[in-house]
Image 1 (cartoon, rainbow, N blue to C red):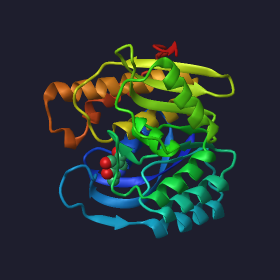
Image 2 (image 1 turned 120 degrees about the vertical axis):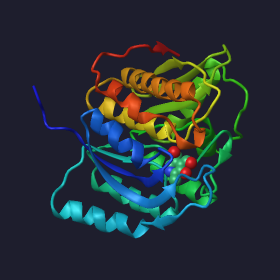
Image 3 (image 1 turned 180 degrees about the vertical axis):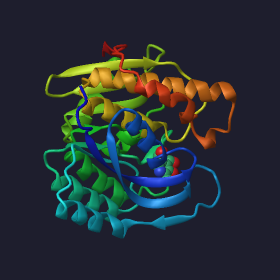
Length: 287
Ligand code: PXL
């Protein structure tokens, strides 16, 4: 039976080259049968990860009039999903979006940094406002750098014990979201994993993934997009985590095998058919 697709407002930047943000979120979620309405916060020639001087057009003053238009014509959303935000005003406008659709699933990917370093755009003001955004979210998807920034803690370079991982997830959940998913965590037992927590049920989840010694931009965006689409279309949190983890593993390992320039991102084009598979993914375990 065909039902009308779930509809998502995706508030992110649009980077033309380098396969991140809306450039990858749109095709990934569409392939999974979810209608994505992009709300671009800025247009960039490339991402900001080492591809020279970026050409940028800020669209901060677009977000609110866009929201007003949607409200005027009665467009409803099943989910509002935010990502990379370049200024305090953009975070404020995102909050307006979330507040305008209180019934919608609120997904916040608190994009602020990676590999222990905050992005250049991540000021103290942005950090403070991002914490507010996180407080109204149902699901957040930080990496370990962003988890540390949100909690105001030092980034830890050493692998986490299971106890430390659970404590991190629980403390992030105390900031507001019922579901917390931490991406790319090295565990003390020698594996890489994506970790999840469902506060209501008090269950901690772990989905292991293979380690690949190269890091690609946009993989956090893709993970959050696949997780969100999976969850929205009826998967449970651990199954959505399993689906997103497996897809990223395919995209990353395919790309790594070709040895392309990491700054160009993952070869989404060849991986995308895997998103149309409806087999149940359940390679999760309890943490
Ligand atoms: O993938 C995160 C991201 C999104 N948008 C822009 C970025 C980055 C990471 O570098 O530069 C513009």
